[in-house]
Image (cartoon, rainbow, N blue to C red; front, top):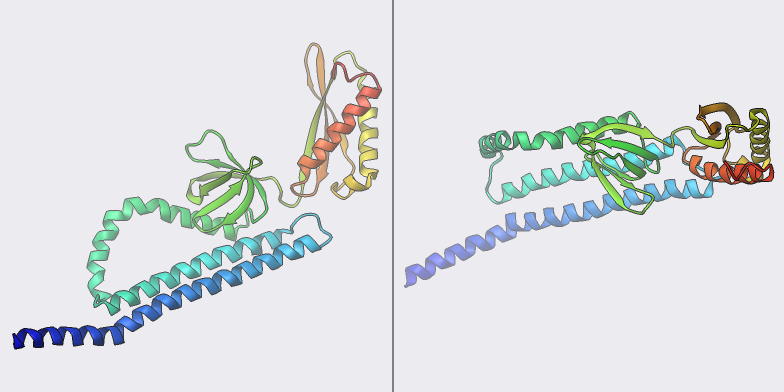
Length: 287
């Protein structure tokens, strides 16, 4: 009985010593990584808020390409740093529980071979995300259309988050779309540097093309002189001419170069003005 008590006492002493030594270090590592994660997230949020505040308080109506890239870069760097820290802390915690890194090499090799095929897509996502960021294909706030592998319809929306693995979009209906970077086939950036609003105006085939062109040219001139639209337009809207012709109808195209992401707003406003002008000339009924 005395020997059993002594053995139990010895185990208790060993456990107490481990808790005071390695156990305390494990707790400190876990608490430390949690605090570091909060600090890194706080720094990232402060940087992104500063970028957003500069955008909202500036005279420019759209984010600069550099600002969008910095916003995305801050998110990606935070994600990478936290991933590395979590990995290193995990190794240190395993050491405190008696696992040696050298002893984990062989099992890790076997596990890596077993998971190799499954991890290919993750590696593909990370590599694709790296080139998306470094090549500045798009950034936070861009309006993009993304063709995804195996999906008949593209994903379209405003970029809300970019990491090395995924891109998060929010479409016009408010839905959040998450796209793995490795499955992106083609990216159409609708808000890079400048955009174009194209309007096809249908008129009867018997209408005088010269008169219609004059009406559309007058609409473009007045739109460019308007204070509200002038801040969105890069130059005066132009009439490209006859775009399509059928037996009873012809389409005349009108285009306008706009600030990035403002082509939809400009297009809606120009359509209203064109419809009103055609109505005044008696062409709205058949247009």
